[in-house]
Image (cartoon, rainbow, N blue to C red; front, side):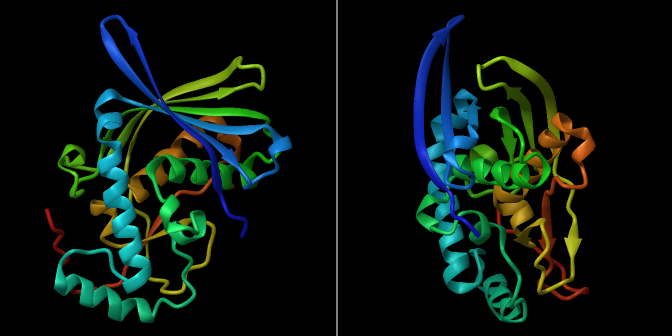
Amino acid sequence: MPEFSLRRLTLALSFGAGAMVFAITAVAQDKVPESSGVQVEATFSKGLARRMDSINSIEQSLEDRFRRTGSDDRSAIRSSIQRFAKIRTYGTEWAGERLIPDVEDYTVANLLEALTMDNLQRAAPQFKGTIHYTIKTMRVSSHPVAFLTGANSYISGKVEMLAPDGRVLKKEKLTANLVVDPSVDRSYDGDKYAFVENDEANRVGPTLAYFVEQALEDLWPNKKKEIEGPIIIRLSGPNEQIRFNR
């Protein structure tokens, strides 16, 4: 599968109506030829932008741990369960490794880009232009970064489809409350984005994947069958009670 690389990542500051607005822009490259003219951009709220370095650092550390050891859980008990179980998940194509092969490139902006571009290849390969996300609020119920923690996992904001000349073709506001799609298939290799079971509460990935799925379905309602979101791979037994670290 072709790799993603990020051509440009900029942090722009502007002042309007007495408020500072942070914008992080990610421009896609390599997943599709540059001549295709497809771009993915994201604007994060002030609070998220200020903490994005911390969020990315934690996410990258957890992703690296998962790839090396088979677990991204900080609990020794849960880690041992996951390491043992992952031996039996040979063949599962995990979302992080599939979308961002180089762990050093694993950031929220890059994951947002990768999820969007991968879906566009299936659902709207003819699209030319820009997909722009505005993310106002992001919550992940038990994320290590306290700013993200909340009662449940969701992302709210809006998505815009822009023509190559910058005209807004379509825009939608949305709040995507994570709906878990679980699977007991321990060798999952489908089109959905596979995450290990505790990621739904501890990692940004599943909630971000669900947000992208809902956003693109709003833009292309007739392509829902081709647009994919997250799937949670259960590693624990059916009678095991799962406790997440807070």
